[in-house]
Length: 237
Image 1: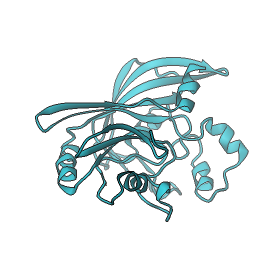
Image 2: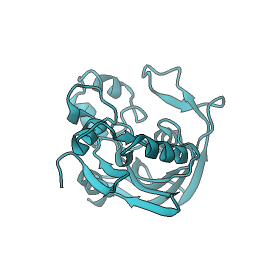
Image 3: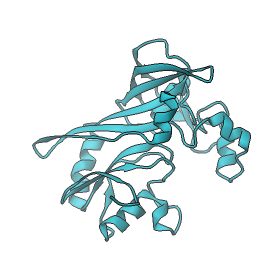
Image 4: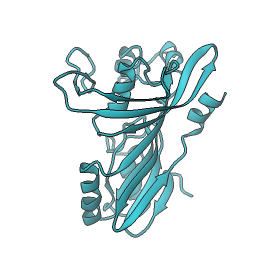
């Protein structure tokens, strides 16, 4: 056990970790602990670790890391071909009306938003497809929520978050695609208010990369990682 991250699997070529929510994948500060790749380099004792897949800062869960450039190349080709199946757990606002459905809507830049990194559903965007299944519907403090299992068939930026928000069920705690994007603008300049935090309900948005499946080197691989305590307590309370 180490204080950098939870190790799910490790061998001579591959490291699989459960990235904590709130941790960026790439360095933004000089502190090595402030990014996942910085922590990986501390853990390995060298700078050869390479991210194969990435998660947003607030998204927790499984990240594949190659211990060498050749392995990164092999696994990167699987990602490019969408040959890595990804399953996420998420908690959204409201009861979703169907037990299973697919959102197949193109995504592109949201030119009407003050948030530079924000995308949206738009007809001239890139193809994006997300499979959604209800795992549980529950009421918390008089409000309706759904726990979902989500599979992004494509891998567009913020895809799951945008698709679910567009469907009328934004992810709990989402500062960009939730009820008010101004919360995100205040967040990035460290000016979030107590009211903002109360509206979000969680310290990070409730999206967790729970499972990865792929075939590589004549073998089937599957990795699983449980969500953090805050996520679990929210839908179990």
